[in-house]
Image (tube, rainbow, N blue to C red; front, side, top):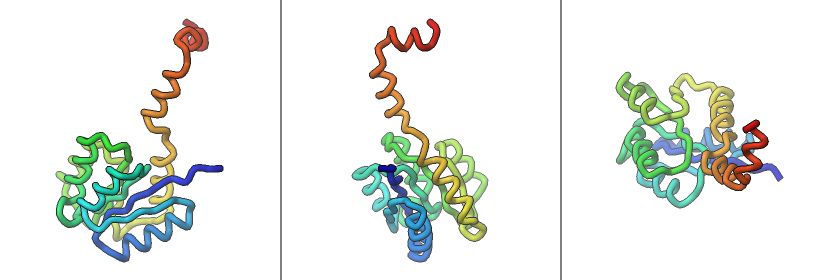
Length: 147
């Protein structure tokens, strides 16, 4: 059975959560939603999501602050910013936090969003890579790699 990737959409606009959620669900994703930053963080702490789509201007925390907490707490999810405008400072902060993408809501092409979400979701988490590598005995690893 193929794994269903989980996406969290954190946005204060009902129509954005609904439209993006429906679109991603139709393309095989399991979708969760949150209205504000504290709700999004709670869901990320309690459940494993492959990708979080985070509005830049969500209530309470703001998208950049929410993503900063995700990074500081080591929550294993890739993030994408959704925005209606944003300053160069916001872009720099997002890049420094390792955000995987930035989409302007008014210019978004759903096919491009889908491609980016799939690209981020399908990457094997580093923890899984480490777990797999640790299961290979050192001698076998060295022989396979010509050492």
